[in-house]
Image (cartoon, rainbow, N blue to C red):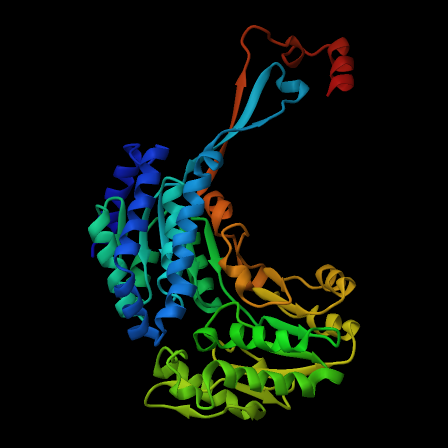
Length: 455
């Protein structure tokens, strides 16, 4: 694909003004919604072929989230796009001031493989809602989903408006050499650094949705049975291949044994005595990641799980005990169905452990005490926080989603996504009937005295 020619055509289409009207934007979002409803079974099938996802998990974690994002954007777009009035200072009086959200232009969306449909389409919804053109680059690790996204774009849009670029590393590198008006990247920290470096050559602003080691803290006051159920669901959803999955468990010493017993029971309740045979349990995306995860098993003792099937790229939900901060499993983001366990004695110790670490994308706390929530919020920084649950904060169009520091920059979902792909143009409309002479030379002492009083 000739990316330079494609981007030139998109820029020409954008400059024609066709994408600016709200009626046009809404029409495109409705077309995507109807296409998804018509092709849900094909989308589910593609996700099964790429990741081994069950139809229920595919709908819950991918299709339904995209549909909700479209519904929410359609319901609020008129309000998001209206001018924002502000007051004026004495220096600007008389006049009126306001900011107006303007589309940025041609946007590149680079999506990962773990939620290939959702993480391609949710940013695209915001890009189009804000009035931009888009090039979407799905992951080559999810080829079936990439193909169906390409089919959707081909069926709904001319490439001068929305285009899908399929392929792998070579295509990624080719796209990053081009000049976009905004780049939205979701993926790993090393690739995120490369994206930012390439974008700097064109002074292109970026959003980076990365990851990190998201801690899950359980104290003695938590509802342990509910905590175990929600931790197992959030950690082993998509076989642990979720950027906001609990990466490791920090449990208060006195309830550790009971919690681990309950976690094991919940794993068996959700996935059966033989999780590798469960139709509800996905596989690891490819052999490379399977081998990487297998190497982490030497970091501790498996108190639950531990079996794997190389031929089917499946690893059981596994809980590792006797893990230290220096263990290999604690040196990288796990991104798989392995849950290492560490202990603490009090919340002060938790704060001391977490405060020096890079800011994660998510922070989870299970507790029955509000003061412990406040203490942790004041002391530890993260992209987002979820109290007494896991992962579901990602699924809300009403909450901005994004990282901080090593876990990323920028935000998406709902209004935050619209703002990301909009430039807020500041406008001052000055009255011509009155003109203040104080600002013009020659400056006299009487002018200076007045200026110092009023400014």
